Length: 357
Image 1 (cartoon, rainbow, N blue to C red):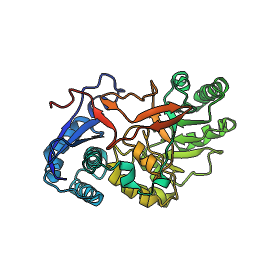
Image 2 (cartoon, rainbow, N blue to C red):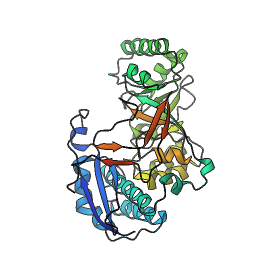
Image 3 (cartoon, helix red, strand yellow):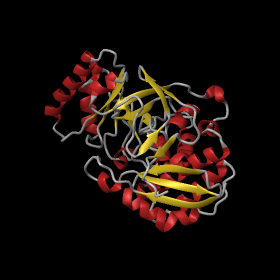
Image 4 (spheres, helix red, strand yellow):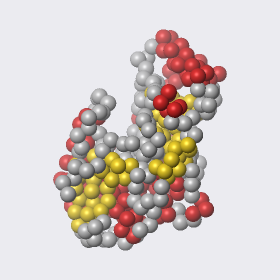
């Protein structure tokens, strides 16, 4: 398989959260090959900035490459990481690489007609045929109607513990009471808590049996702080989506930062980077992908290389419809268990009009 061309576009999103996302949300990359009927797609963060990095630097490092096995994809990743060290080593550089790396895996799978789960793990007896899910967001009634039984609430703090503790307690208590089929309740703080706030809140919520508390503070704060694992009154600590450099996970392991690691493969460098993170973990820390219920995460879960728990962000239907993508991966979602179709690549293509052809 020879790479002949790379295109990258930043779609126009009708709905994005405020802050950085309107200009720096997910891009789509298309890879062309020497077989003009076969091409692949990937996605990554960084928006307009990632587009400039790909067009102005990375594409030229990939076009013309021969890719005969997955080690060739890994070598391309290693070179892109090396070449972006002056301005990368994480952040937008890694997000741009993610989009190319995922497009390479998608293209390779289609070109050689091998499902990605089989590329990652040849022993099919280790594969997960059904995938456990949880929904992230606060539209619990909709998620429950879809049959999902595990929920992660989006919570942001203004630092006012005394007023916020009862509101959060009551919210979780009412969810457990109303939806008595709910199994796990998690909390995503989006870096709005700190270590002391987390200790106090976990103590206050202890009788509600929160499964994990996620993303409590900035990566730098947690990577450089004394471990608080085992000190949250039964709740686990999760994080890693904003650690966009596989080397951060070595620090994470050394400092015992999180119970659960949550890399995002559309931000941290793609599958090739994730394979390094898996090696670093060496099965010591569970890996639960951030947004793992999207097409790019599902083959990793199916392969058995990471934990069988897929995050679905604010699902609205049982086909897990996505903005800007035709998602053909889902066969059915039944009682919170996801069953996929058989497909090559990631089973998802951009909607018509994203690219000109």
